[in-house]
Length: 434
Ligand code: NDP
Image 1 (cartoon, rainbow, N blue to C red):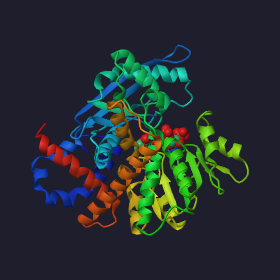
Image 2: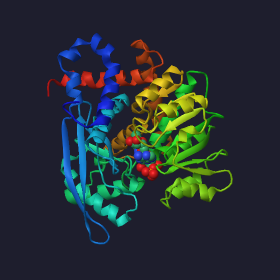
Image 3: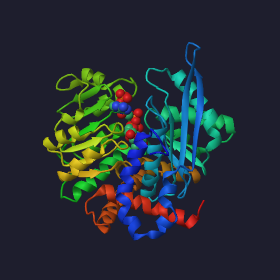
Image 4: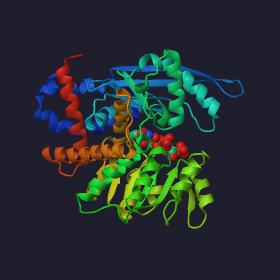
């Protein structure tokens, strides 16, 4: 805390991981001797830079850009870029730290990193977004490369932004280096299923958790927070598996739709219209109701999938969900559930999946995109989705087995932290003190 003052989310993420690692370091003194934990908590490199850009009226704006290259023991740094006004060093570091373990859990050769800017894309024209992305990449390009650092999207960065970023990278370097960014469009090096992967993966993971209790998603009421990339494809997969999504949200409120969210309409409102969930409620009419402000977690359900942002589901929300009969909670977003809320779920016997395991499908499919780019190949939707499902099952099973091995049966938090840590720690030991 003294070394990283004010980086609250980073402290929270580190504390949560270290709490799980006690039994591991007791069993493996070699990790202690090699100072693995202290080295893991210190990013290999942090880049902070100025991003000046012109709005449509010719006015100059200034934002701050970040890239934290946290750990490359397993492969090139890999992790998304977030454009949101709340972005500062503590957010980028918490996300980068989580990313190390998540990427390790996928079993694929990718290190951990994260980046972004305090730029607010809301209300900006496409031309302004493009100029911002070009300015951002004009500094960042020198730190990237398919063997060095490979960013992707996150909050505020979708296919459009990845396109502008890739275009500027290509222009500056004069290289069509497809593997330098993931989340690309299908006609210019992207992978099938990447757009859907995080949301689909969360639901595959939830399905595996439910299976351990002889349950399934069929007939379950589900609440999903957010209405961005992760939320929309979580909703899609829940519906395909027979569940009903009765509510979703954005930062202005939530919509309750007891008949089930009309996904085509939601995609239209959020996509082409770049609208809000309140616009969805108006367009849907009938039973759909928009609630301004308030907590989406007040809506009773059996399954809760927080897919918006960090610390969005606190102890009160957990209490409301438990009272409403929740059976399973899986984090689609990164660290959306506060530590106290996790404790309440655990005490109430609610299945709980941490983001670094449950939302790893996005980055896993990014690694599949890198594989396709490296071999100049493109796989079918069915093949790629089958790979994603296999990866999510494997992450689930290894988390469960590791939790059992370290005397915390059924504790996916411990399982994910320990399993993710061990693979990175062993690679760091092998590579020496570097
Ligand atoms: P999007 O920008 O597509 O969507 C974000 C959604 O969350 C929007 O509905 C947004 O509402 C809402 N939201 C964002 N910030 C806040 C806030 N402070 N309070 C309330 N609501 C908020 O982002 P993604 O769907 O890509 O990302 C969502 C989460 O999933 C993040 O935690 C991200 O790190 C995580 N994640 C994403 C992956 C991916 O592949 N995209 C991979 C793994 C994790 P509004 O429009 O009102 O801001």
